[in-house]
Image (cartoon, rainbow over the protein chains, first blue to last red):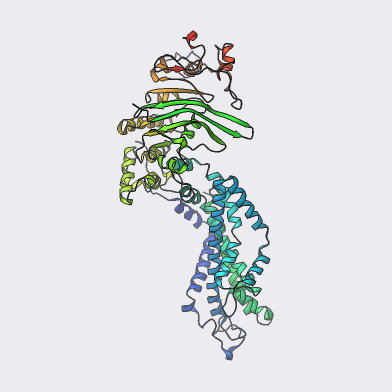
Length: 289
Length: 324
């Protein structure tokens, strides 16, 4: 036989990683995000003070050597609150995105794969869910919930699956016509097996990109709700409610606004750039040499 | 001996928005264990739709409207989907046209070859991997133990078709359906694949149903040939008879349209005039009549059924005796 073996075998994931590394902004963004996320994760070790430690002797201090980002109206250290708040914000963002993307993938895959009435019903439900203005509904829902992290995750996740569902459905419509799906059916693989092992893995590119962007979106939504006073309630710090607390004093004590704002901006921006890089790396039609 | 696969009066139609397409119009055939049958026909003759119907894989809007397909005595078309899935891949398996697209690009070839094993046999991970290596060796993939961790894009077209064959053979099926498995391959690789299937058939004793538009390719592989035209079998017989003494004008046309290696370079290839009929109308007459050089009035009015030329050879033509 003359067929020759390649020198080294690369899986599709490895090929995408090679492509991703060429996207410089995305690589910088990964670094930024990982550093911030790790810092928040290690908050109990890194934070110079407790997040809720009130220090009546040092109220409203401007940034200094002792308090890098200053202190707030109750003398709490902004840096410490930022680190602990980040844990909540990022955790809510990531879990809500996973929930929304998972749900969207399930709905999209079932609708696309089974077609006919399943497709009609699920896509009309998606249209309706899409048509509802999200923020007012979020406000109503969170007003009635106990505003714990878990309910925030559920509320945000359950209201952010529609885009994923549509994207996945479109992918599945073409994937289900492929010969490898026919080949899998010809050896008796069940529908569930085909969806799980053949259809969804081949739609993974757009799903991952969507999930990444959803993390940024969920952090924004959580911040918005907290800013409106409907999210996680004080004294638990999140980036959103830190912003809210500072809005009255934005002009006189800008450090209370700037640092949480900057944290949200950096993380969301980084996540969007990562999503952009993943899009380029996972979509073969934009692959460059 | 009872045939291992017997198809009776299979009718498949596609209910499209442009009308009902009569893709398969009452075909019947049988294959004995360890024997090989080729179904020959041009694009759109219903040969693929016919086998996909048997497997229960006909895509909507296609519907199998009538007929039976007995595999080891059980009618596949009457089985509920869950029971049919147990038969598919275990007793009957299929390989497809384009090996570039019939392997899943994101899964390793070892995983895919093992898919049928996981589906039908209760093997441990070790035993399954040993079986996969054995299968890849069987179909001639060198260095199988290492290469089963590779992905489809790392293999050539011929190797991918070998992997497809390994996947189909995983559970030792009694019948292998090959749906034009060499169409997308180089001529030299085509011959290798045909040789491979021939060797495997002898080694494993399975029956083969080979769908093709290339009569010459399978001449050395199969025992019997069924010629399809417009969703009907128009002639069926031992491969020797079909080549040496074709009875149907369409079969003759097909053979005349084949380039001959011993031609002196002056002969022209003979094309069959006209084009296949529109399958949206049910055919009351002989489907080939509009293109047939020997068509008579009767041919344009009634559809001839298959008539026996001899014990093994049957033809659907009103005038085969006149033309002999």
